Image (cartoon, rainbow, N blue to C red):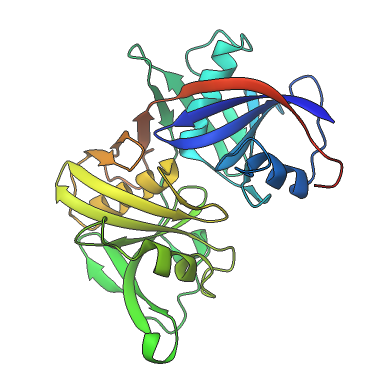
Length: 292
């Protein structure tokens, strides 16, 4: 099967975008893995699929598959690329669209400076929102928030890290570090991602605070490994920092792939907004084997 695709990136988080507005491609998890493979396929952190409106008041459905072929609830950098794609392809003439995801409805908006702002909804902090099994754990209160002790490894390699748990429609565990460049992302990221207390796995964030309006961030993403940027990870990290009393309401997040701006009042009843770039890299077509 031969399919057309568009390669896009948002702050270095790269995507293959597929158009299913005229019909389903019917791809299997193995075929999504093939597309995402950087040696045999196109190469991407996630595959984003554009589908027609599933209901009144919704413009499109937004489907996300990780590089491991699994479908996930949300992707913030992908949401910006999604909005740029449907506008550039003439699928809409709106500046703001309403998009259905597994996690709910989001509303990306194209701005005059070429970036895209996304209403990412309300961050949620209750363990069951991720879900996170907090049984037997004692949280450490700080500001209006809290962190949880998470035991990693076994034997002499055992260690405990404090994480703030946040759901942005997908699960995040955020820890504060002194220096993201030396943070043990490759070693502890997989341990946190697959920790038994996160039954649906989790995205592991490493947050360095420079001042109340500037942070640095690395994220080991569920099903993708460390990426150059993670939009929902940036949202979760800033929401956690605000909740812990460490950050102001508008924060620039410097990732290895670029700059994202996150704004949230700190009110649990209000939405959080993310602004950042969305760029088309190239377009093409690829033969997808029936059984990669």
